Image (tube, rainbow, N blue to C red; front, side, top):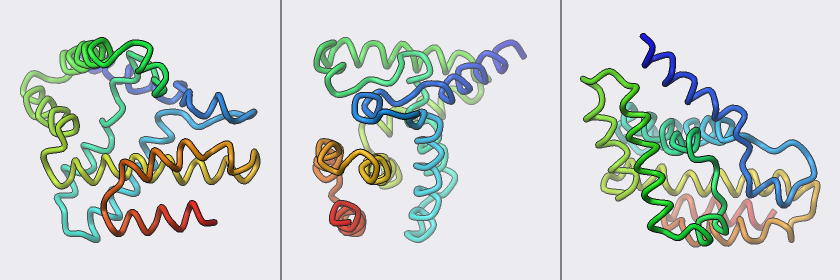
Length: 179
């Protein structure tokens, strides 16, 4: 039971982990990693169902896609560049191992496979979650841009556009950026 409590404590940390990229651009309370993950999960539920994808898998992927940030924090692209890819990956793997250690032993292998799938984008569900992560970021940028000016959000739009290749999601992004 102690492991389950610790796992929940980690997950709960995402509610207070503000997304750092927004903090640099917005002069108000910004969304948390938990806010973002919830939004990604809703997008994944809708889009996964519409496409006939494995909903259990897609929801698990969406819900855990940033869970390691409860331990390592939310890193901006600048943070990742400063630390270097080797260090970031090492820290990420350490955080995932810590999270896995809190899960029931019978569940660990399946969740490790999910994290591996996210990292390597092996399944169509993981590829969709990766792209929805970027689309959700663009939605949020648009929301903040209405108050702070859309120019401040260009980096976020460009990142989302660069990381999204699904035609339907590309059209959604074009609509967000245009408005």
